[in-house]
Each structure stands twice: as C-alpha cells, then as structure tokens.
View 1 (tube, rainbow, N blue to C red):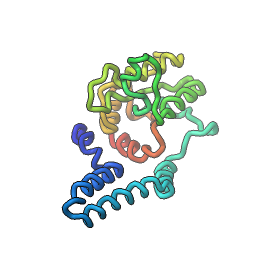
View 2 (view 1 turned 90 degrees about the horizontal axis):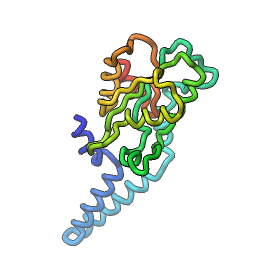
View 3 (view 1 turned 180 degrees about the vertical axis):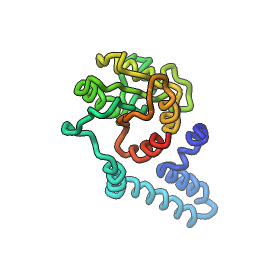
Length: 206
C-alpha cells in the first residue's frame, strides 16, 4: 500500500490533472482541433481553481479547528508525554550536505514540543517516523529528529524514537508497541492541525 500510494500520488493531485489535460489537449489538437482546445482550456480552468484559495482555506480550517490547539492556559499535567509525527524534517540529503538542520513548512511539529517540554518537566517525547519517500535515505526521520532534539538541548533520557514507520498507520501501530511505552496512558498527539482528524482516528484505533 505504501508503494502504491506513492506511485498514485500524482494522480490524486489537481496539478497532475492539469498536466494530464494539457498533454492530452496538445496531442489531440492536430487531428481533433476542437477537442484539443477544450482539453487545454480545461487544464487552464483546473489551474485557476487551484489558485482560488478561499474554498481551500475554508475546507482546511474545518479540519484544523476540529481539535483545539494547546494554549498557555491548557494544563498538560494529566498527560504522560507527546507523540510527535514525522513530516517536519527536510530530506536526508539536505542533512548530509552541508550537514545542517533542514525543516519543512510543517516545522511546528518540531518547535512546539520544545516549549512544552520546557514548561512540563514530567513529559516524555516519542518521535515516530522512518522514511516516507520511495528513495533510499542515509538518515531516517527519527535519525534526523535525534540530531535536532540533541542540538536543542533536550535531555536524551526523555525521548524515544521509532524509526521503522513509513505511513501514519505505521506510526500508530509501531508506536503502541514501543518497549517501555504504555498506550493505555494519556499521550498528546502532535502533528499539523489539518492532519489531526485523520491521525487521531488512526491512533485511537491503535
């Protein structure tokens, strides 16, 4: 399923649809001019719809607001620790050369836990993430996360790493099986807000 999802990801992206429509239009335009033009216009329409941010932002906001964000007023005393999902770390090649920290536009997954760990000394942290790409990587996401948290001065005894998972489903199942982790205790899930409904469903089931 992991390989299939990666190979089919292009077909699920609106940009991919636009490219396919444009390619089909250009191929058809010599023999079937009207059909070719129609396909090219359809490609342009898809691109215009992608650029219309209003409906997209509204749909994302519905996902993002389903679970409340942690605020300074939120008490995390009942929680044992944080489960941080991968996805915020740049590709392994960026960490290899020039050997610097590289975060993605999901950097909040790595930054927010730092403040929570400082505020609540009792919290532990579990980072779960192997390699989400098809290509081979020298460093798994867990390897990169360890480099990051060590450089940020996080006590290594407070952090556990799961480095075999490749999907959110794997994250949940493999985290629940980590030695020394009790999945029956209350853990706080940390991921991008729009991913929370999907991730929570998977983790609650696991």
